[in-house]
Structures are given as structure tokens and as C-alpha cells.
Amino acid sequence: MNTPYILITGASSNLGIEIAKSLAVENRLILHGRDINKLENIKKNLANNSAHIIWQCDFIVRDNIANNFIKFLDENKIMIRSIIHVAGIAEFKPARLINRDSIKDSFCINFFSILDIISVAIKKQYKEVMESIVLISSVSVHSSAGKGMGAYISSKAAMEFYGKAIAAEIAPIRINSIALGGFNNNKEDGVTQMIDNNAIEYPLGKGEPKNITGIVEYLLSDKSNWVTGQTFIIDGGYTVFR
Image (cartoon, rainbow, N blue to C red; front, top):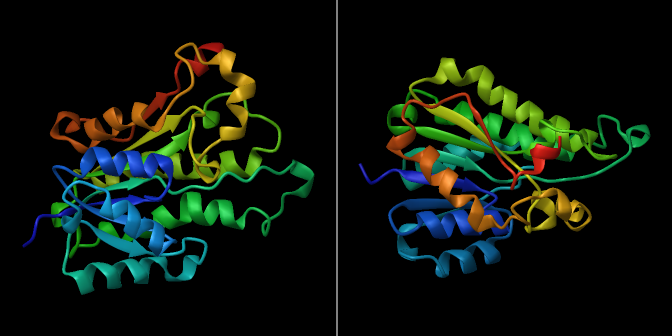
């Protein structure tokens, strides 16, 4: 069997790219996204680029995610050992405008997509080499939220607490979340529009994607082999004020 891969969803985001760069030297990666041209360009600029492969899938179209993932794994004859769910969307709407249809994209991308991927990864034929799942959540789940963030926070909370709920069930596969404060990233990945207004509330300054890779590497490594069902708040001290 070939060396197992690490799946990075949302690999074309700034955070996804930074995580891919930090892992590319010693691992085989699956780079997920919607824009094949952007993914190809990212792959070309990674170390050991020939070792990595691309999975193009639109998470908004939920009905095909699980089957698409199974087809991808089987056609490429690969196994995965870790998943990092970076893919996310932040859509802010006041409560008076929120209904099931208006929050569908948030839940499809932030939560339902990883639910479907995990359901495949823990099947008997795929889970043999699975070790760790890392979910990228938001510090807003654990602190006071800004106006219009109801749909975004609800979808991130659903993802994060689903991870806690299944941790015992899927053991020895580990599943943990990283709750991020706002940092300089693509708009679709986080609460970037709030950073400048709240800069004074980050004692360690504005975050960058490179500040996140260390904790991701830890949660993928054997050093975290007794850690599961946990949330790590990485926010530059933001919650000190909450």
C-alpha cells in the first residue's frame, strides 16, 4: 500500500496554503477545493509537488460529497491517515433575515461537508490507517459574538460539538478542534472584516496563518496520541477580554 495521505479541505485559502506548505515536505497531501486552476498552481509551488494530488469538489452541493469522496479514494487507490477541515464560509446576516434557505451554504460548507467526509473515512475499508481529524472552528463559538454572526457561529458550533460527540465512538482515531480568533486570511475563511476594528483586543497582535501550523502539526503527530475530543483556542489572547 502506498504511503497514506493527509486531506486538507479548503486548501486554496490562505490558511489551507500555509498548512499545506508546512506539511508538504514530509507528507503526501490531498488538496481539496473548487478552483482546479488555483489548486494546480498551489500544488506546483509545494515541496515534493509530484507526491500530492487534487480533489475538486463543491461542498455546497451536499448530495454528492460522500459518493464523490469514495470515488476519488477508490479511483486513486489511496488511503488517508489524517483530515484537516479548513474549508469554511462566513456569511453574516441579521437574525430577521435568517431562515433555512439563507443559512444553507454556511451549514453545507462548514458542517455537513466534514460530516459526510468523516462518515466515509471511518468505514471499515478506509479507517485502517486513519489517525487524526482536525476541525478548524472559531473563537466566536466560545465568546461574545458580533451582530449578524448567528448562522456562521451556529454552523461552526455544530461542527465542533459533533467532533466532541463522536470522539469516543471513533477512537482510536483522534478528533480535535482549533477555535481561531480573527486573523489575516481570505474573507471566505474567517471573520477578517472584524480584525481591524478589534485589533486592540488581540494582546499578541493580529494573527497570521503561519501562527496556526504548529498546533495543526501537533494534533497530527504522535505527540498528541492521548488527546481527543478537545478544543484548542488559538486567538492571540482575544478571549482574555471575554
